Image (cartoon, rainbow, N blue to C red; front, side, top):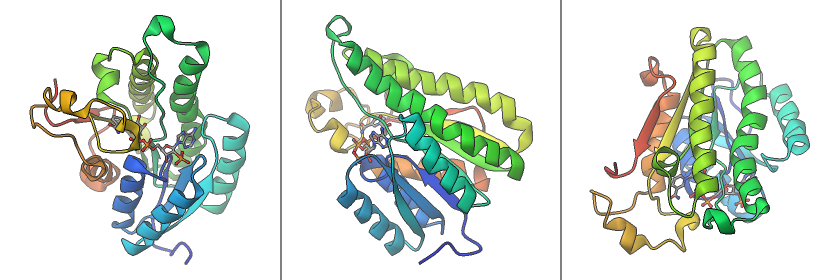
Length: 245
Ligand code: NAP
């Protein structure tokens, strides 16, 4: 299948698994052509594409490390060349490398900050240039409750996720008059591979709803923020966390 003339186009980073996959499938339900980025897991990315098609959309998988400027530049040059309009960018790719700050080696600091913030820079810049030309578009970045309140053992992750909020709010105000909206979604604890080693039972006790969230519950908010129903929303952070804080 190829992109239909009436398809909108969305790029979702880190879409081979977890929240990114749910976002890809959710947007496919709205007939988006979804560009499914991922770093290494070919089989999982292919499965996301299968689910995107089953949901009524179409798309393709594109493997590159969002934090690697040369790789990302090459991939984005090709995407921008092939797609005259890019309607949505979802900066979702993220990693954790938890440690108490004083025990944290530089590599753990750099990998988390790099994936999130260099990734944001590498993806948002080319897409924003295109969106400014087309005078429309929506960019949504996936932060975290840790970016709002911090979290013991996650100084790198919290810094990266808070950075996404600061960058998004700043750029949102730079382009607000140009028809481009830039928002952030801050999930709480969501059932994905990322939290497989987390003490879920203990954390569940501090979630007012008494349960962890599903990737689809984050994806639904992203879909809304990309839609015209969110036409007056920019520079905002929407928490999806079962009532935490
Ligand atoms: P996940 O299940 O671990 O999936 C991570 C995804 O990101 C995978 O598709 C992975 O690709 C991709 N990825 C990692 N590094 C990348 C890179 N450098 N370039 C391109 N893709 C990369 O994580 P998740 O739980 O779905 O998390 C998605 C986002 O939500 C992250 O930003 C995370 O910080 C945020 N978040 C998650 C939770 C939670 O509780 N799960 C809570 C708050 C915020 P491969 O499959 O190829 O490795």
